[in-house]
Length: 397
Image 1 (tube, rainbow, N blue to C red):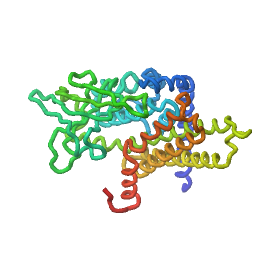
Image 2: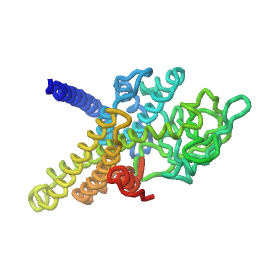
Image 3: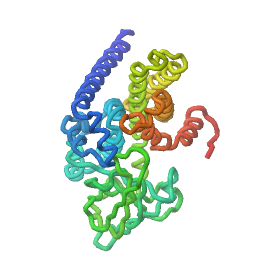
Image 4: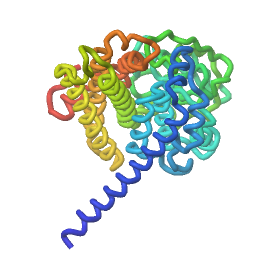
């Protein structure tokens, strides 16, 4: 009898591993068909979102991942597999999917039946795309205290929202925005008095402007201006004045998913660099035979595999329950960010002048990797979190 539990756990682990392996194969097969090098280069160059690829991902069931709108959302382990594969190829679509998965988690957790039918169902299928309106010009990590966007309740029970949001991915062509606005002045805690709204992008009073960025060029980052945007009370997501607290519950998943895309970038860059090292010749032999170059690629490979193991552990821990120690997700994000920047830097050095060529993907990996040094939380704040929560050190900020 003493052996029953370990055998059960082992069997469950094997089944989960097989399920995730099948999912990875499915994603790779789809991307091998639709994410051609020319297509990826095209959308990066014209700086437009590949809407049709997003819809194909939805039609393949890779957004809802087998979940129903009246149940819980997909597992973090499954999302991580999809996002790593996207990060290694159509990175901008992968970054967009981090936002879609976050929106799904919020809707699965807090939407009522009507909201699930109107907003979650088309998101599941890939027929709709959402943006997440949290960040503002005057605030970063301290966005709750710095939030100036306000929602005033009118006599008929609806709300008038005015303010500005900053760095809102995909807001120009989103179908709706999950928008946070202050509904009650700060009294004791800055994270209270903020409400989450479901706002159709077509609502009068919304104006968006694209921000010119160096990376993730296939997904527009936007300024969103809100001028007396009228939203009915039925579009409050969750509980009024508790919106920011509801968002906090999704941050663990957002870190995991950001780590997965960063890991994908690192893996894609490593594969590109190794392939180049095997084919490129100098002094009559493959440059991959040079010891110093080999060492840089080996070090990058170790970082990639280490980050993957941390991510897998963090995803499993997160799927085990909401009370699980969330330090692993912070560590996974930090490790994946380091793997992405280290590997893309090594890749640029391996390819030398060819790495600068916009005809080849290394320069895109190099640019895109920099996003995850500060998103969804800066590496410095991640370290502060790990120091306090994992090492028991005094709070440093």
